[in-house]
Length: 318
Image (cartoon, rainbow, N blue to C red; front, top):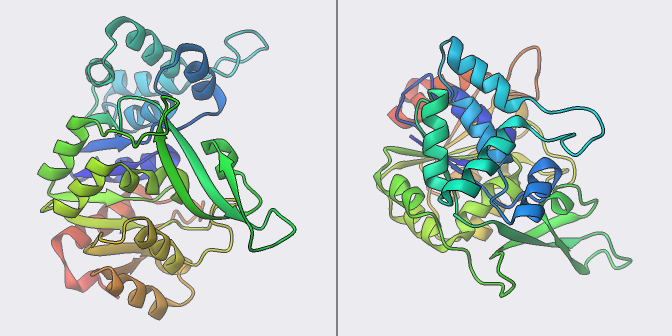
């Protein structure tokens, strides 16, 4: 099972997939430019470690040592000094990157330390820059403005229409995928896209040419997991089917087999079924949100729905 994404959305997927198999690979976005990750990226020129750290914590061993490591790497320093706001895991990854230089080797070393079940890989081995075409922030409501940077895009008051991804080398070149990530997609039994920040965590994967081509060519069952609620800024006001429309616009040739959504998050199921069919998929509506926290996925329920989608169990389809 290969999961593509970043941040808390990818953590939700990994928390579900680890209940299904130990053979899980996380392919993580590397365009973050805010918080601790942004500071380390600017000061050291390194990959932003935050989303990679979250994926490692999600797959950490289930024993006492694994839980201790997961808690430690997620711990943030307080106070007002130079370390304030930095996560311990970010500094650990930064130090190892400075020593070893190879992000894949670093992640494999930390995975062994934490007893990670599976593997964590960066989408690309160099940090990426993100731009978005946005409407609704100019006097002319149809005028497109350009916003640069993942944090700025995620918090824009406008409506994101399209994103672009570039290698951070000043030449605006297309990014080059991590070869191990491309291989993982090709060799997967199932590939999961989403949930997560749609424009800044999910869609970037289809904008990396080698990953895009691997997603089209893989023999894996491709599954899209939709968000439980629209995200303020990026997808405010989006219906579930609009998420699929945006995915198709950024990757016109992409076909998927299954689309998962929470029953209570889909006000017009017929529209979602129709949008899924346009991508070659069937929509599975299931109860996959936590009862006590409706905005968060229930790992056990999501795991069961993912298995139903991958096994094409028709008894679970609505």
